[in-house]
Structures are given as C-alpha cells and as structure tokens.
Length: 125
Image 1 (cartoon, helix red, strand yellow):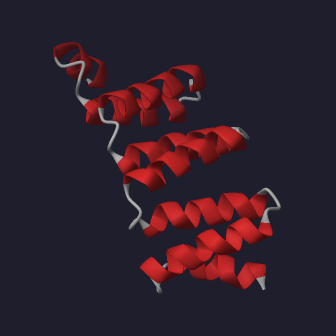
Image 2: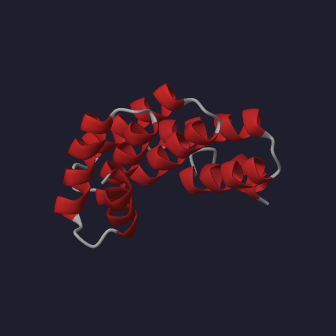
C-alpha cells in the first residue's frame, strides 16, 4: 500500500517515512535507511524525520552519523526539547559528559518536565 502511495506521488514524505518504519521492522535495514534519507530529502525541514533518521543510525551504532543528523535537526528548530535531550543522551553514551550536560540543560530549559531528560539528569549525578 505504501509503495503504491509512493508510486502515485513520489514526493509523499509521510509515505516514505512509514515505509521506512515498516522496512526497519522487517529488518530490511538498507532499504529502510534509503527511505529515511529520501524522507529527509523530500522534507528537509521536518525535524521529526531528521530525528527518526538519527535514531536509525544510533540503533545501528553509527553514532557520528546520528550526532550529525541530530545537530542538523537542532539547527532547524532550536526550541525542540526532544532533539536537545537526544543530543544529551547520545553525548553521555559517547562519554562526552560536558557536552551531555550542556544539551541536557537546554532540554530542561525548554521543557522542565521532560521525562527522558529528568531520568538522564538522575543518571548523570
């Protein structure tokens, strides 16, 4: 169904994103990556799609690629607490504690009740 939607309108970013989800679930990772990348090409300002691509890279251990995409997402919307939180979490996982704290402060300044950021703050103390 999604492939049909894309065949009808290959610029349908939502169809590409949902296809990427489905392919990822089927463990067709090369095809999923291509669809995530295509989604971001079609809708370069869509922060959610950027975060999904970053998460895809992160899940596969491609931390530098995930970081680059998340930092790009941050440039698109510097009011997005979720992106700041993910950058904090990624930095912490990479052992970059100072960087992680900087991103965590941003996330909590934007959303003081952000559950993930609050849990990460506890882990970092």
